[in-house]
Image 1: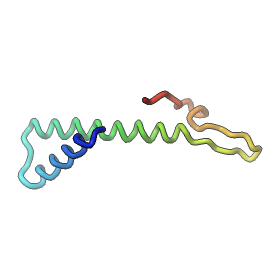
Image 2 (image 1 turned 180 degrees about the vertical axis):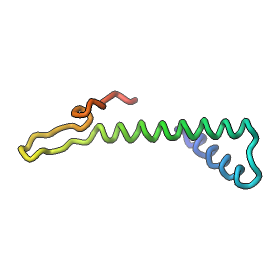
Image 3 (image 1 turned 135 degrees about the vertical axis):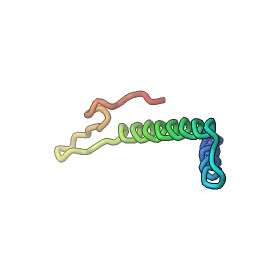
Image 4 (image 1 turned 30 degrees about the vertical axis):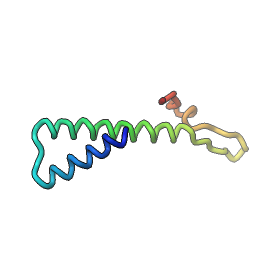
Length: 74
């Protein structure tokens, strides 16, 4: 998500508290929030898929491969 989009989310939030939003602005805010949450989930999944665990026997196991979630998320 680009910084301009994050700034717009914040501006809409401030406006909603100060004076309220029009219906179009509410829809825009909802869409931007959904996109933000989806991006956070995507980034978290990518980070978790990069975790390697060293087992007691010395073998290394990638959690993304172990749980079948390893995807190219770019």
